[in-house]
Picture (spheres, rainbow, N blue to C red):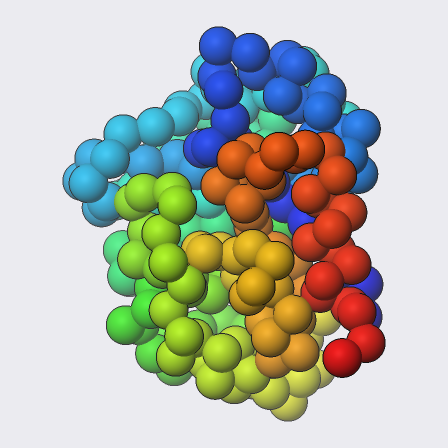
Length: 221
């Protein structure tokens, strides 16, 4: 199983965004993860279409946009036009999840569903055929640099099983507290795509850290 590393620019130095993106490309990042927060669904405010547009101009890498917002459908068209390659929405605020995922796909983007730590996987069991990506949160969303919730490993294992049983080729992404210590067990549980913010940008050599995380994930025990 191949490993995708998706650095989150939530932890980047935004005053130096062009250099930060260039560094991520140089380090071999697979995707760029962009966290959109509205101050309502989560207690923080971050990026919108303008930032997605700016990042799009700086890289050809796939832009993995994570919408931590209420009424996410209000943003789909703008974000797709700004250059998003994938959009992931929270099941907790998506009562019409199937329709919303379908709309993301219509716009030519990867459609992802996100489950918070307390949200059961049954929240996505009816929409597996509509998923290109399933994102399991391993911290409660809203802030970078949080500690990995240990009980998440079993949930990731069950998520992998759910996808496999349904013959789904959706990516299984994990976000929250991913670093050198946690990535191996998460990979073993079945995840293939890893969002890392603090672990990369706070490292002494952020560029090398991307490859180090990749190695740690797949290293033979």
